[in-house]
Length: 202
Image 1 (cartoon, rainbow, N blue to C red):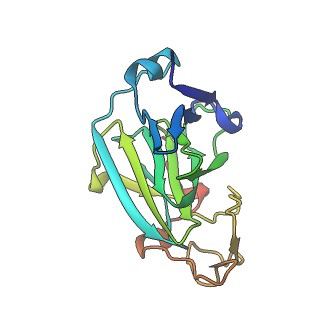
Image 2: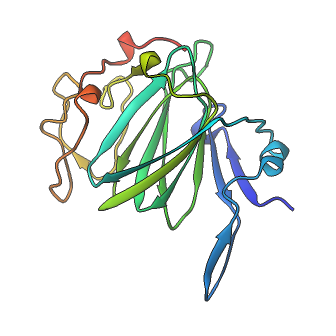
Image 3: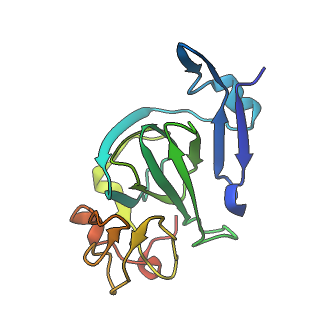
């Protein structure tokens, strides 16, 4: 019997999948399969992963929106500690939903996973005091091939939860904070990405 429930075409965007694993728990704790190739294939997800990554971030950190231009990656992401709001933006040339976004909250409690296929920009905002984020990739990381998209581009209009502030014409974190006053925290590189008008079509 399959150990996952899959919401396909999440948010009406073809290829995005929200995956909920079966969790077996008792007074001792819980057990779940975080990946099972047979179950994924039964749901039509025929994937080969070549790299696993893990990151830790504190509240208010926003990573993204990232993609690779030539060595495009499919990503299966999940949170093992804390909570994040995870976002994908469709950059596929022939897609009917080009430029559309979808976001889902991933937490250590809900144990949801989010599959983002090739052709998307991806990023996340940390909502908890600390979060640990894991993801499997279908291609290797190539630093020279990395691209990015402004996380706050009004043409995309991502509604980041718990975030306050107004767009000032760039991806700068200046003027943004979480509702509790925690400043928004982006890398220098992520504050330089441009909006959809300058993004490549993948």
